[in-house]
Every structure is written in C-alpha cells, then in structure tokens.
Image (cartoon, rainbow, N blue to C red; front, side, top):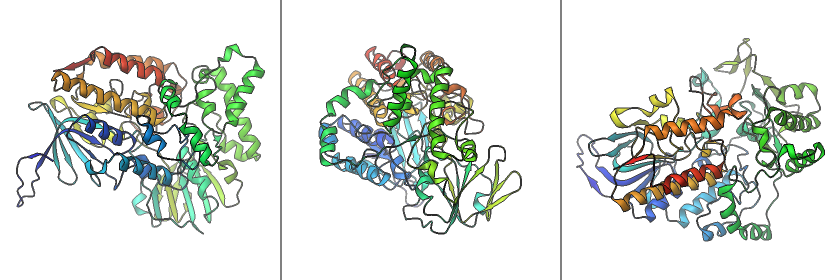
Length: 545
C-alpha cells in the first residue's frame, strides 16, 4: 500500500494510505465493486466492520434467517464459472449456507487480501483543494482516496429505540447483531418485538424451543407460505443450465426476479383472475406480490380483491377469531408493505406457550430490569428480549458516518431535511462519492438485491473507466439533474399505494425522518435503461473536470 506522511510513534499518528478508490462494505455489492475496480487496475481497498465477508448475511445470523429470493437468482451473473461452481442445497437456503457462498466468492476471486476487516469508517471529508476524500477509521487509519464508493447495504443500520434497554437483567439481542454462539431458549420466557419479515422467521423457528414466547405486535402482516424443496444434483444442473437465460432476463424484469407481470387485470374474467392469483399463491414464492398483477400497486379495487384473497387464506389456517383479529391486516393493502414468506408462522400461535401482546393501542413504554412495560403499566416479565425492530433503511448506514462534501456540508444534515440522490448513484454536493443500495433506486427495496447491486456496481465501474480514459478527475451530479431525478422518482412513487401506507419503505418507522418512498417504483428494467442512457450521453447531468 502506498503511503505518504510519516508515522510518529510518540503521538500515535498514522501513515496516510493513498488510494484510487475506497469501498465501504464487503457484502454482495462491496465484494463485486472491489473486484471490478481492482480489475481495471485501481489501487483499491475495502473496509468492513465485520470479521469476515457477507454484509447482511454476516450480521443477520438470527434463528431462521434465510433467502426469500430463489437461491439460483440471488447470484452474481458476471461469471458463468463462478455461478456454476456453487451448488445450493434448497430453493431458499438459510443464513449459514448463504454466508458460506459469499466466502466462496471472496476466495474464488482472491478478494480478502484487499479487505480490511474489523474496522468502522468514522468520517469521510471531501478536500476541495486536492479534490480527494480524506477518510478516517475507528482504528486510527487515515486514507486519502480519489473515489469513495459506499456499499453499506440498504438494511444495515439497526433501528432500536426503547428507553431502559441497558437496565434489563436478562439477555437482549437485536436480530441484526445476533451472536455467533448458539443461544439456549429451553425453558426461557422470551419476548420478541416486531413481526416483519425478520420477526416472522424468528418466531416460527423458536416457538417450539422456548418455555414461553410473548410476541409484541403493533401492525399485522400479510404473509405467503414458502415452499422450499431440497435440490438434488439434477436440480442444480437444471438451474445452472439456465445461466444465460437468467443473465439476459433478470436485469430487465420489473423487480429483478425471474418472473414478471404477465397479465392485465382488466383483460381477464373474474374466474381467470382468481386462477392466476391461486397459481401465484401456490408457487410458494414472492410471485403473488411481484408477478401477479401490477395493478395491485396502483389501483385500490384490484388491491382490495387480492388483499381479501390473502386474508381468506390466512383465516383458513388461523381459525380462532381472536387470532384472526390480531394477525390479519385490515388497515392497509397487500403488497404495500414488504411481504414476507413464512413456514408455519401462523400455526406457531396455536401453541399453548405462545402469546400475542397487542401494542397498537397500548404501546411499549420502556424496558425495565425484569422485562417490558406497556403504557397501561403492565410489566411482562422476561428472561430474554429479541428486537426484530428493523432498520433506519436506506439512509442510516451513511448518516452514521460523518460524511462531508463541498463547503463542509453534512450528508446527515442534508438528508435530515430532504432525502435526495441522483439515481441512487451519487448525491449533489458530494463529488467522487458513489453509492449503492441508496435511496431513490430500486436497490433500496423493490428488487432482487443481487440484480440491482450488480447493475449499480457495473455502472460505477464503467463511469470511473470513462473518467480515467478521458483524463478526468472529478464527477458530481448537477443540481438540475438531481432535481429532475427526484421529481421523476416522486411522480412514479406517489402514484402507488406504497406512498399511502406507513412502513419502512417511507422511513416512517424512524421518528423525524423525512417522508419519501425510498425505493424507485418504476421497475428494475426501466431504471437500468435510465442509467444506461445517462452513460451513453457521456454522463449528461454529471459535471466532470
């Protein structure tokens, strides 16, 4: 590693490492970004707080964590050899297998030598005199880099907000910071807060292991039952033979999945609509949500009919009217929140050791030394508390770093006023900073993540190649271009029912966060086309010098 500056042992000063690019994060995006930038000959390093690679799939090792994208499409498609060199054991594998896969990728591409683990980026300040970024870490490293590429993940900043947590005398865990050592639930009184996709996976997994489980529920969720067949060698060979098909298809569908919307609601009879809905439901995947009828995102009557269908399916399994009232959504429509896949989640509530505590009208007030206290003064005594409380999505991973652009402007302060990006790839006022999985791109939520992250990584890599070929040093989106993208994003988002529903998709789970649909709703294929057009126009809307 090249350095400039001198080490002074007496005052603990560190050398300044000089890089062409620094990649923050070693998950799905960070690994590929490091590979691409290194392949074009840049001096590049990746930094990650974890002790190994994996990103989301390193941190989220809670009981029951698994894919809800099919394993054979949640993959890198830039190398047929890499794709075919790994075989999945089932359609929706669990976290341990996913983590092993990402380690396989890192080893196959020989990436570890350029990753600094166990390190957190504390600050990144743009120096207008040198037109480079000066980055500091919690280890005292100082890095002078031309390009800063953030691959921090959409859901990587845990959102926890209960007073008194530090006083709890039992064990308290956040699902996104789950310990590596096994947790013994036997005989324990366990409380879990949150019943989104993560909470559901934990609840259905531990219900049979704990002594008693209290599930604190504010907003019930629509669900889809997961069908998760094991893969034989023949199955693996069958999906591997479709590599070229996936490579051509996935980047152009609405959500980056294999399946896409094929039917128009208005063109079908009621009987045919029901048949399509049933077929999608029976697939045991996210197909009903992202491949039945696109109208469910835009038209209330269509959404209402599909919502009624899912409620009917849930009632058939729950039976108990009281459980139906607590677990079946009534106040918002199917698909306007993140839709989880589940395996016997509803049946967990038929167990005598599982109890629902509704906190909709009686919210959690605080954590006490012995458990959880609600607004009515009740204290639920517990041995263990699990927080499946979600994330400061999209923005949190970046606003927790002290990022300062031109004129010392702060990204945290800018996004506290208004969450804005240019195609989720750059932010006006922050030259030479590229972002993946950032707001206002489909990678913020409505996408098979590997599809979208690969596309963004490749766009960033190609942009930097273009700059180097032209002898250009600095790139930044113009204010007009960013205004145009935000307007376009909002026009599409505000036409959807998503914009009318409180959820983390709008940041409404974080108090005080500016309200804006975080994910681009125009579709993965359409977004890719917009990005490609920007590149083909010699990056019109981006000031370069």
